[in-house]
Amino acid sequence: MTTTAMPMSRSLRRAAVVLVAGAGVALSPLPAQASSGAPTTATVAAAPVAAATPAAQVAVDTALAQQGDPYVWGGSGPDSFDCSGLTQYAYAAAGVELPHSSRMQSELGTPVSLDALQPGDLVFFYSPVSHVGMYIGNGQMVHAPTSGDVVKVVDLANMPGAVSARRVA
Image (cartoon, rainbow, N blue to C red):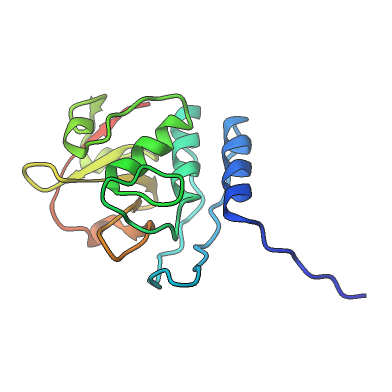
């Protein structure tokens, strides 16, 4: 007998992630799934994370579920994102409202030292702030990098220009 796994649609996968994460279950992220016509960019394998708060866990799980979605300036989901749209979307799934602006997000919550990051913390780049990503643990972050790219996980050490971080949940 042969069994074949049926691929799960992106919207069904997202709904399952939000539902399970909302119940307080930590998820291991799935690898990005390329779709036809989308840019193909290698992603760093995200290690399983455990955030300090349920809201941060939901935000991390939701952000990771968006891997492979295209960057679109002004995008706030559910199928395309810019950097602050991704963090806004992820935290909205956890019931936390954020503005759709990396600079405005950089003024919210509690300041965190870059050497004391926890999963769910927002990391801001450049001066003035013009980019944001979400720390996911193990020296990695998930972000929507730039036009022509996709939401992906990267090593924070390879990201130039980190200037601050904030804990919003």
